[in-house]
Image 1 (spheres, rainbow, N blue to C red):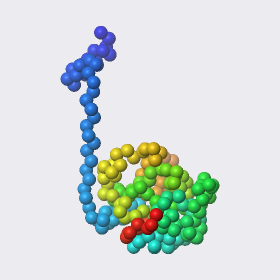
Image 2 (tube, one colour; image 1 turned 90 degrees about the vertical axis):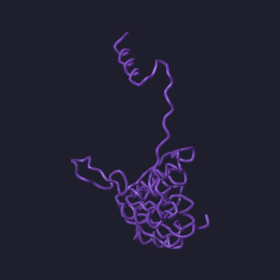
Image 3 (cartoon, helix red, strand yellow; image 1 turned 120 degrees about the vertical axis):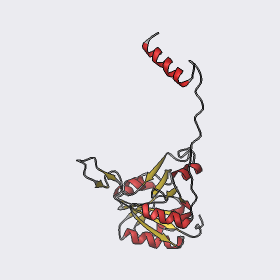
Image 4 (cartoon, helix red, strand yellow; image 1 turned 60 degrees about the horizontal axis):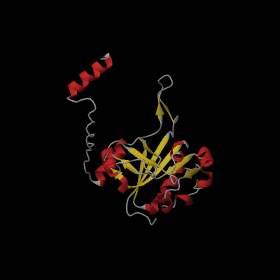
Length: 213
């Protein structure tokens, strides 16, 4: 018996297993979901998020809030239905042309998306990449604005995974978790913002009823 076989036999003996025995099924994931009030989740998100948070009473105030954040900058918006319903495409300086998305993202000062959800515990924006909302909009422009209804504000990652056991499926190529501006200390251990993504991140949280989509 070779030394490798001897070692593996000892491991099997320690685990109480036999050669050729099928492995046990993996345990069920342990998800800890604590239910909090919308006000508590909002307060937690505002505390943890490393950017600015603007709360508006309903969707009719979204366009004005976004225009104020733009402050004269040009912007490119994704084709998410929620953004269209909130009138983002009609805001001055905003382009929502999917045919010229790559060039728009390369030249715009701001990228505007919605989000799959927000996580209050860590102050995180969760995006699911799709044809309507590609990652490029949230990554290439130097500033990112996310417009999200408050009912998509969840407690933590466990709650999101309980709702979405398969974050990537046929409808989405990737899931992106954004917790504040892009930061890196790779170069001589100096903290630099905006190297691998936007240097500024803003969230507009929309209360009230959902606009007609």
